[in-house]
Image 1: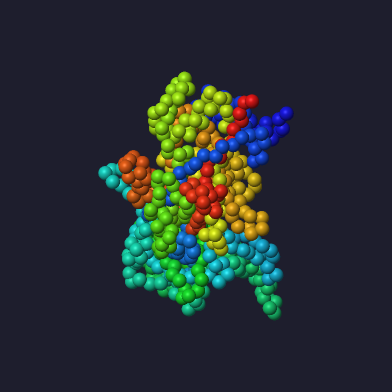
Image 2: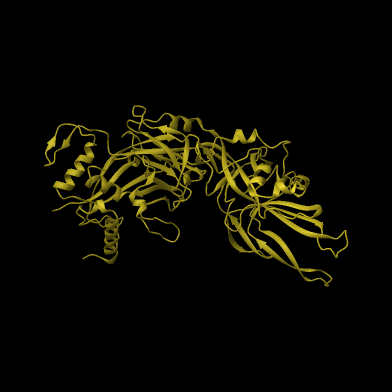
Amino acid sequence: MYNTSFIKKILLVATVVLLYSCDKDFNAIGEGLIGDDHFGLEHTEYPVVAYNQEVTPVQSNGLPLNGLGIYDNGVFGTTTANFVTQVALETNAPTIGESPVIESVVLSVPYFSHATGADPDGGSLYALDSIYGDKKDGKLKLSVYESGVQMRSSYFDGGSQFAQLYYTDQDPDFFANLATPVKRLNDSTDPSQNDAFFFSNVQQKKDSTVVDANATVKKYNYTYTAPEMRLKLNKQFFLDKILKAPASKLSSPAIFQEYFRGLYFKVEKSGSLPTNLALLNFFKANDNAKITIKYKAKTAITTDPDDTMEDKTLIINLSGAAANLYNDVKDPVYTAAVTNPNKTVGDERLYLRGGQGSLAVIELFSKTDLISYDDQGNLQNKPNGVSDQLDEIRYNVKYKNWLANEANLVFSIDSDKMAGIWEPKRIYLYDLVNNIPIVDYATDGSTDGTYNKTVYSGIINLDATTKRGTTYKIRLTSHVRNLIKDAAVKNVKLGLVVTGDINTITSGRLKNRILIDPANPNDYFSEVPRASIMSPLGTVLFGGNIPSTDANYAKRLQLQIYYTKPN
């Protein structure tokens, strides 16, 4: 007798079948996804050819999140992430006022954080999220400059409009073209503002209101905000550049962005101190990064005395075109692994790394192609361009009435190489050739309150004792079923990457497309998932090509298919 959970799963799969009309002729009996106990099912494991692929310079504008900082990783090397962005006046053609005198210029960028309790002095205590490296003692030499490059969101060529792309390897271009004279804008004498900057988890105490001005000790109500970057910028620069600018330069967004071309954030090591890297949302809705100029100017009220000054505020938002700019010093072992893969039988280790890093190419089933079957199911001793293992599966399903209930790829983590290294919480498997999600991702609406697409998964599994990662499991049942039931479906190469956000499946374009098979000019890819580009993390997984004498042989990558077979 079927239980309720089993019936719900059958209904879910039935809905998927209706959505995919190509499934309508397939025998759906027994197609329900079975739980991880696999009760009553037989499974077979098939080899997988999996190998490394370096990711060359890739588009880094338009990312949902941007890295800023330096991340040292014992396996992959050191990543330095700089950032460049346009700016825009919050109000165009502002009325500055006469004889302006700046009181403060503050650049603020929100952090990702969560409250951990109440602060005895008011407000809350916080812990920072999305900080990688040494959270406690990590420091950076941070410099903010005026950019000299006029960035654009699009360009015209031959009368057609195209998106303007910026790439991860363009840091030298921006640094060599800073606005002149080159001046560090965060030039405070406080080293925490520049030479020893750190991502602080302390809440910000903002504007205050006097409760009782006549009290012996004035009482205030403070406004508290979550932790954010707060840099004091050079007042004279903004007095000259903004408040004393010709009115025409502040008249429209296009003119202003040509006049003030943006900010360039550069990070370096702060002496011998440890470092870290933060993922930031510079363009967070309703709380974007901005420059706040507070100043006084002569009042415009005609009845006031001529020398009366009033308080004024001008805000410049960080908005428009922006790009992450990477400078990597890669570990030699890692470099050799991703630049010299074994594309014939696969690699022993798979190195996945975000940013301008690396991915793994996955080819299901062995490459042996010696036999085939004719339309009547008769064995033919000739190749047909299909893996012999896939031919056998198709034969068993069609002529022996086997049912493929579930298919998984389980990736074991090389815990020795990853010891003490920050592990990505999730990996993402997709159709590398067509640069789209596999059907199991597209049709999975599951959630557990923390993660989405929990059936498709790719979520790290942790050891209960060490709390370190052991495996990642990805379900590709529908993908494999489509291969089995429809001989016209091509067994495409799959891509495997780390992901910073499983819900982000858009891609960034490579500066130069990558040829996978030198013998086949049509076997290439030209894009990489953006969720991988914005992640600074990496992991090392066991591939499928591990010698049987190796102690890690049992951890080799294989495709697991669970079948129901008639008695």
